[in-house]
Length: 320
Image (cartoon, rainbow, N blue to C red; front, side, top):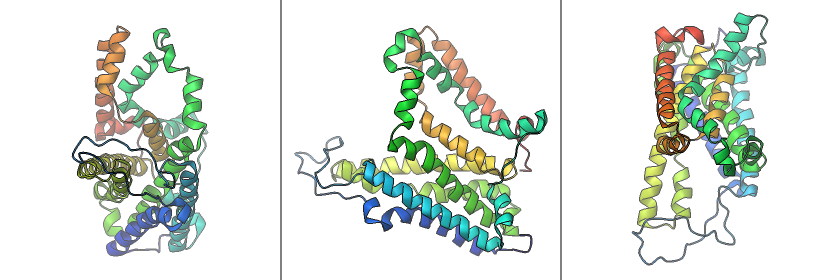
């Protein structure tokens, strides 16, 4: 592996190729492609866009058959990308550490800390939402369902399999492990790890722009629908790029462990985007409004401290 050296241009092209293969895979199969028919004419196309009723012969993103076909497609694409990295490094054993796919088991308390602690960094940021989630299990909130009920709703269907299992695993292997592996094989790029954190997640953010077509069609193909689709997709690109930067940082700081970004991805998909005002209302109903605010502040401050050089002592083992 040490003899393999890639130029910056080659690394950039390979990173772009990995992203293209992953996204493009869902359009290769007819079963995985979305199908939209012409929507009915609306009285005022500038009205606030709302999701229309699905047509009889249409195929939407959340249709079980579409999800299954896409899960198969991205899984194949992921294996292909990993195979390319193995081919570049000329051996599977050489590629596994670079991809962060090696397994390590604790043999002492210190080694247990090295394995577990990095997985707690992202949940620390969500301390406020986690506390609000705890409040949602109070007696007055029984209507929200028990922990068992909510867990089944999340994981007992093909949508949950996509959102919380296959998508996080395959996306992190491709957009983090595979993309970063070729960048790390370029000495010029590998030396600037801050640059890796800031630039490589752009592939991940741009890979989500294709959702605009889905949003535009589901909202009726009006001018207002187009505006909403563009705004939603740009916002999604922004926060997925930021999240990608965090996962890249975690990957590098843990000496190339892809498992930490994967658990961070799964966790964030489950939690969703924080609803601060909704959590405040929940806390107010339980007489814990101020505690929710404190939990949010502690989470943000604790996370910010932990990703700074002076705060990485408890979880990070890299060199950024």
